[in-house]
Image (tube, rainbow, N blue to C red; front, side):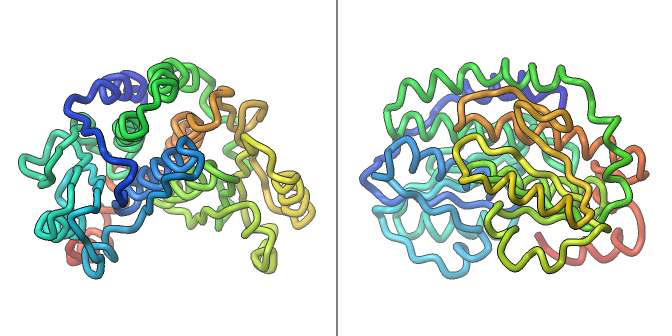
Length: 324
């Protein structure tokens, strides 16, 4: 995690970023954390183009098996190590159809496929990806900026390593561990672009702490979902970066009335703070306090974010049987 600011700075200088055509279809695809990065990039393009361009972010599993492609399509595939089955199959099918293909991946894959190969940095050793997520965001941000010829967005991206350093310099979230350590499941919510961060945060909690977590929007958390809220749970509510109709406040009040332990994340939050950056830059910094929380919870619980139970039975035997 400590390497993220410098790694993002290097990724922002990634050479060979193609000038994709905003008039042609754009699909972004990946799995897990990679898909979350794709969803952020799709959000950026839609927002920066004022809705004139609306990319699709689709999981590589489905797109590889059932996607329909044409030579007009522009397909960006994010795969941290470039080894997973369905992203590779997707690239092969899209290339055979004549689509323009772009691969965003680490340095470890010698031949990941794609017309354009953009490298994020050295492959991450940990199974619980942190730096790989932020460097993928950095490269995808460069794709979005060049596609839309948006100099202002590119300049805003250039300042983000300093915001990451500022976030990492904040105290580790040690004092709040007792409020969450014995709680399960853990709900993580956000609004707008922060909903994607909530999904990524829930995945980190599962991978690193071996606690079940679920990310969702504030509004979904208020519809039907309260039937399962109770005092065994924990929750992380990301305070909104734009007007949300008071829903974060409504949800936090409801959760506390039901006995749920609630942590708040945001620029003014005392639990999981991060700097007040441009709204579209929030994914770079909002995830970091949760990454650090996962590290501290894992230390206290004895879980291993590097191996995600790959070192203990029955997981050590069962998981490798599934071809990823």
